[in-house]
Length: 251
Length: 193
Image (tube, each protein chain N blue to C red):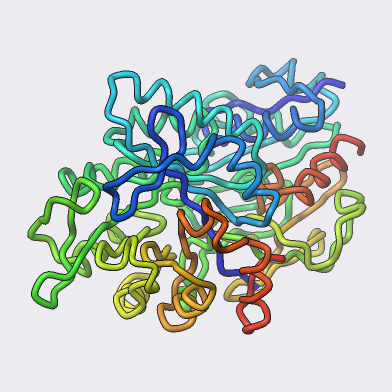
């Protein structure tokens, strides 16, 4: 039986790991390759590297990191952040990334999803969607959640799936950084309107939250950063706890 | 030992190369017929869409070379699927090494299947030291139907062949290069065949 996945997310700036609360204040949480190896060793099912640097050399730096991770880590990983063209994706996959995630670039030019899916296969295209509720309606946001669009989350999710996304990484900006749990209602809705895996992101604070997002949110995978980076939740304990609660995980 | 990873422009080649490096083996990427024929072991990778991958094989005439190889050959993911008779994906005729067909998962489940699933009924030296129900990492929308050549099965929507073997040809739907220690063991077993 297919298991539910636990995915630590490493935010990367200039080759180092950072994690911001609500994407604003950044704290250093270590060397990405070392951290990745530890997580793989502890039983993480996948890793996500999200590059938030804004320098000219960003692609070169990121590509070097992807090569280092691919050489040393024996579980799958996704790379995202600033990826906006077929060429960018090609570079990351060539360097050894298993999947890439695209966000703003897809909102600005949705055809990019079709182009990537047909060139590389939909299995390696993750569309990341950041959204928050405005007047009770889930609205897609850009630039790490700062800039609202006029696109509704559920419409966009349907569109990206139709265009060939292999997976959706949904971050609730309302939940991110709160440690109050994932946006399970929206997640459950996503799973009913598209037939591709959904990764839940934003709001993990304790083990119960993971259980809830797998059961109530019907998520296929759960992503978190700070609770893992600052050792508030250990991955072996989390997986044991989920297993004890009847959730199928890889142990 | 000379290990060739067939390089035909449709593979997650870097990851396989690195996984072999972690086992202390330096693999060579090649699409040269003589070099492939003279290798001790051949790995046939593949990600992406079946018909366009098959087209690339045709263009480089690898489609006629691969079925005639006599050393151990390991097809991974799409590589394994292309070794079957046919695939529903793009209505593709395969290499016909494995006598089975590749079908699409139904809409009863999320497609693609992405993540770690178990493999069972293990029946090959490829799985030496690998426990029943071990977890492997899989990413795929199409699956090989069960056949006499099945050496491992998995379950998603239905029970299907997650590994096949015929003579010197081996195929795995999962990604051993991304499946932690157990995956690494499978690659090591392949190198020792």
